[in-house]
Image (cartoon, rainbow, N blue to C red; front, side):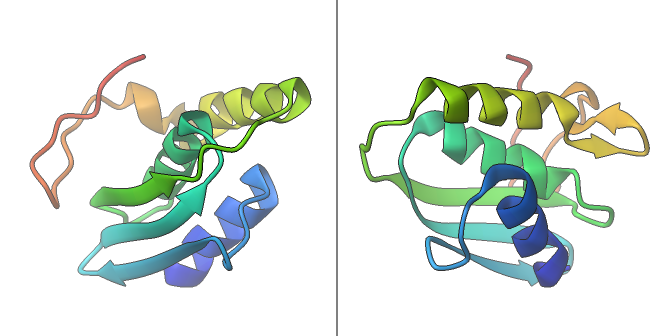
Length: 107
């Protein structure tokens, strides 16, 4: 599952494993590292949630406060909308985070 999360972060969002570390235990994913924007941070969480078998995501990614181009922001926004589980957006599933008991929020 760790490999699937890292692969999705890199292929869909362009987030390098050098920037974000991932660990998984009992279907609970922990994301740690730094990204340039809150949009990238949110996109990483949504991408991880969309992996089959993930019960919840603890997003500990920090912001490096860099600038994100309009093109990259548009791509990240599209990636958030396209992250899916069984053809449904992970953001629209409406279930809670089984690892932290947090509710997933709609935008």
